[in-house]
Length: 470
Image 1 (cartoon, one colour):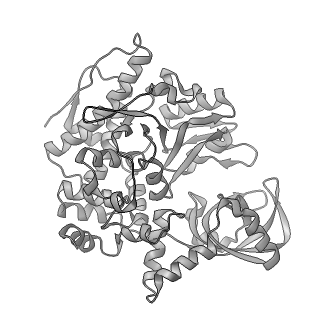
Image 2 (cartoon, rainbow, N blue to C red):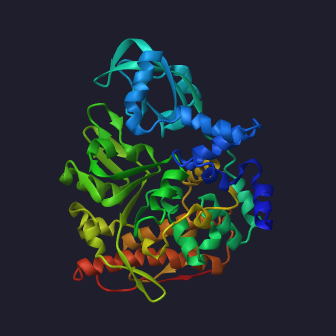
Image 3 (cartoon, rainbow, N blue to C red):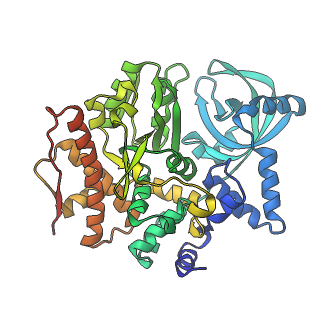
């Protein structure tokens, strides 16, 4: 084991994980943070733990198309066990707690004691081993009849974390070493990528670690955009194309259930060109208002949220010099409703995903060593959202006069997120700070250049700059 991996094991202890195991065991059907938790659990049992783990997944994990099979087993056998995500909603009128297994669209009553032991199921949802039993008497809740009950739930996530662990471990790693640790943690091999590409990958974490960041990323297929967000954290919701309603994103007036923006740290619009809105004017009005203020209204509900937004699109690229550049006009990658300057200006940063190579075979691009356990890492990033480092950025950085208020807000939020990732102990020198400043400037400058292209009269062609002070 290399010196760096030894340091990861030394300073992260039980939270140090051999990242190879998750893909070598071919557990790609479940998120990485769940796979790593199960690997640790079954390893402790010893013996043929790998065979036991594979059989456990084969017997208890169901694909969305197997929904009717699950219902058949429930009806014929009375109970069924399944590995999935459980999200609990409360119907105040009937004082009933209803669990929704979203991938299978199955609804079941959840006893109070199970909810009390797993309160995160009320907020973001939790992955675990769910035991469903057929209900003798159906209940009418949320305009539907509920005929099942969750009789047992074993969660698959870190029960408690020390949020200070990353802060305490950081001084023992150089910046380059720390970046390698983070790249391994998200499941990729840092040795395959250039320093520039490593930073682009880590930039994808900014909307997860920083509140109310609006990011866009465009690049070719198979560069790991969806892979990272799907496998990193249960606090992220991916919406892959299709029709999006105000009820799904904001608030369901009929069931009075909050939408994804109210409960997730980040909502990711995958394949943005295929996104359609059931009520285009209402959706875009509320979306732009939320991107600006962090608030939205629907019906009698007024919600303040810190959820970040990520807009991802696949584009065609071509070779140019030492890298690749987009062939398409980025504006037309967006659905028609989003092709206006008011929306684009609210995007805080544009990540050049076209610079990242395609992820090919696991043996070439996926991690081959130790990183931080994904369930711990997800909880740590979630905890780090509570504090913004924008004021720290203001102390050390002076902006050029051509910064508008939205430019300033965008720059500081992106810089804050990068600082949290790279320097969780808040200790850095001017050269290290410059790396963060340059990247945050670059991402916002791309948005400014984009705006100038679509509306040159309103957005002049000018360069943003900043300098370190103090």
